[in-house]
Amino acid sequence: MTAERFLALVAAYGADRRRWPEGERAAAEAFAATHADISAPALAEADAMDALLHRSPTPQVSMALRDRVTAAAVSARRTGRVWKNRLSIAFGAGWAAATCAGVAAGVMLTGHLTADAQADAVLYQASLLGVDDTEVLG
Image (cartoon, rainbow, N blue to C red):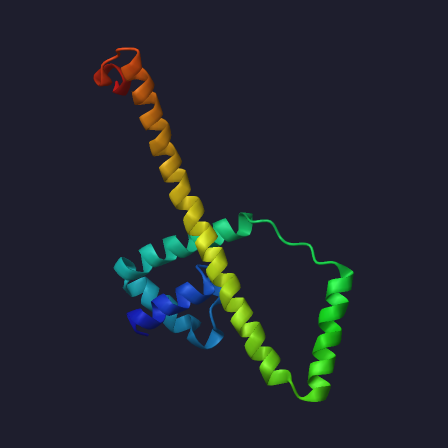
């Protein structure tokens, strides 16, 4: 198991080792045990992303939509459009994953920027009152 492959597994399947492919799980676990300097940060980041994704709301799909998707799949299989539909689904899944990653990054960045903006506002208001920065910062 190379470092690149281990990092690719963690990026694709997350920190939960049960989700890793069975054929590579033992090698990946051995790599993680012997290369903690590489595996620990990657697993911590993946675990944080997993937690963020688990906290997000699960969309509720209507029965009508489920029935339309099922009917379209049956129709595609009958007409031989299965490969085209699979590529469309893979493409859509890629966009969905990129969207989730963008939302997660935005949430993390916005929280930090909001805290900075609040600190700047407090310092600005203190300067209006003639309070020295050292008194505000402690």
